[in-house]
Amino acid sequence: MSRPAVSDLEATCVLPARARLGECPTWSPDDARLYWIDIDGRAIHRFDPATGLDEQRPAPGRPGSLALTATPGRLLVAIEGGLAFIDWPSGAWSHWVGLEPEGVGNRLNDGRCDPAGRFWVGSMFDPAAAGKFTGLLHRVELDGAAATVRSDIGVANGLGFAPDGRTMYFADTLRDVVWAYDYDVDDGEANNERVFLDFGPLPGRPDGAAVDEEGCYWIACVTGSMVLRVTPAGAIDRRIRVPVSKPTMPAFGGPGFSTLFITTIGGGGSHQVDPSQPEAGGLFAVDAGVRGLAETRFAGGPTTAGAT
Image (cartoon, rainbow, N blue to C red; front, side, top):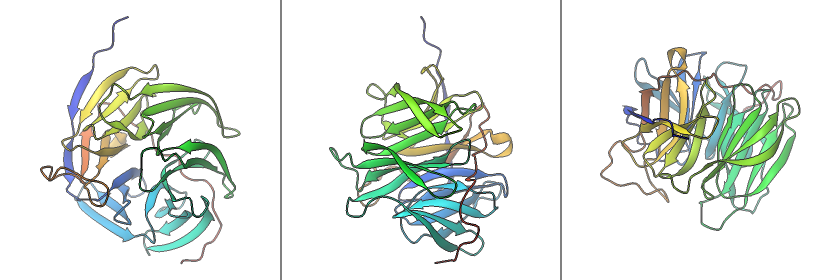
């Protein structure tokens, strides 16, 4: 059987943010803004593509991922030690749920809501190191009850759900693999694990992901300078070239969810970047030629929360 033709697109920098570790771009239809995080910069950002304005709020620890909630301007954030909410207008934080045992050395990383509004989040040993597979994958229910559904993870990444909710994707950056699972939205169970994408022959390593309305999976190739689109059958049919070495995560946004935004690593600490890449750490964008899906909002949480 012949392989499908692969089309190439080029992403351009729309915000020279110089983030140390940009991640988790998330489009909010409420205010037509892109929320994103700088993990090592300990900040939550909000970018307006119409004006180019980027605002930020300091975080009380390193954020790993975020999700929209039913309340505009209120975000659920996976942060060091557990889950918290931030009220964007005031910048106030409220701790909600503790996750991860103390003393292991993990931090929370990639996270996303499933179609029922639960929050899935994985962790990693910090800093990432070969042979350190202490990461865990958690499923957090609407009332905050958390279940650890997988262990022995290097760096949890690539969470995503098919448009019909029947397939879940999950990647381990250190193992260079993306898995697919049969997913039951009603009970939040993921079964029948199989390899969806083997990164062995591919550029870079698997990082954050997004899913489009056609059910194709977009995965950032960190250290590989590109984002790949993979069909549900596992065939690569599109490449987005990014002019920096470490793209971290794509997300659909803008009018009609037709723009693909991409966060990147700017360097600092253990994240070294070639100094000849002045746009590293910037936010990139491209017309993807396909529409994405609105992110499911976290459907739970406390009724009220006191700021900390």
